[in-house]
Length: 221
Length: 221
DNA sequence: TGACTAACGTACTGGTTCGTACATTAGTCG
DNA sequence: CGACTAATGTACGAACCAGTACGTTAGTCA
Image (cartoon, rainbow over all chains, first blue to last red; front, side, top):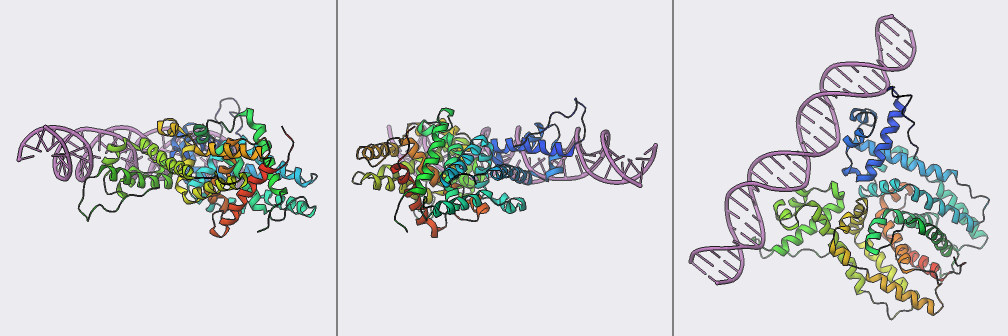
């Protein structure tokens, strides 16, 4: 999540539309992630920016559309990270592991993003549905997974029945749950899934799980 | 989720504390699951029961404590299902599969429960933390998993490095994500994870994944 | 440099929503 | 059967909160 520049030359208030917009988005991301859509307060967002509530309506047109803009930017960040990934030089096993680790790392580093996705699901993805930006934004990862799976199957390493979208769901499940549900899981089972001391363990476990699934022999359905 | 009895003998309004309480809980479960904690409306819950808002405060003392009561009952339902499970007669591989399928089925059949857990995580499990009922309520599943893993290791079927809590997290991840994130996942990747036509596929995939992980050979850490 | 517009601020409103004060009735037990 | 209490209903208030009407200033370009 790109953050806003410094106070813009020594105290003197300057007009800067881009900066104001970005600052509102930054603060709104935190506020929506903190309290959910209905729990978030437009006044609170305004108070934490150097501008006023009026500007939120001026630039975004309302709470609903502000939330949509927040989502668009948050998804944009992970899409960028995915596009930067290069696994063409790796063998299929290492490539899948690398890809899974990218998701693992991104989710861990962006808990606000995870919370926003949870919130958006409570609202049945209505904001995504109404966003052209998000509709157009495909997933580079899916193409990468497809290429790796094809190569893995060709070389006889992977079983034939794995689907790219399913595999993406499998990887995301583990990474998402660990961050999204750490509070209830911790409270009920007494284990902090995001404890730094166990980070490497879970990162390895994820790769082991995916590779085991892809390389296991099993009856075809 | 046990539902409330029929209109209580032919129209005539009778006083029945247990029934009123249960009816409020039923309706509140739906309302909180529908809209989240802050999105839920106490007036709306009252309107959908045969009693009034006054009763909600009379029995539960407030919105916050009503939500806690809703959580307690929802968790109680899955704990009951877990306790009914009997896998002692199965071999370790079949037993783990059966256990995973129980979670899979329960999550699919109780989307409201999944939503409540998501909502509770947004609120950082504060209601669970304040509930003695939930604190006392351990997880029977964990004991079952421990027994199966021990048996699996002893017979040489399973690798030594699998932990019961981790395995529970792995199974829950997949089952939870599929239901909780179906909206955003569907909107972004064009696949409905809860499509009945794919139900058997994902149910098998879950078992395959877990068994593959448990039976794979890998370097010890 | 003056006019024009994008960017910004203040103050307010109308509706909503949690919670409660007050009044009432059904069941029960001595 | 009369008194007592658990259970229930009505009406209202006070705070909150999304959104806006109205007014002002900074930058820019002819």
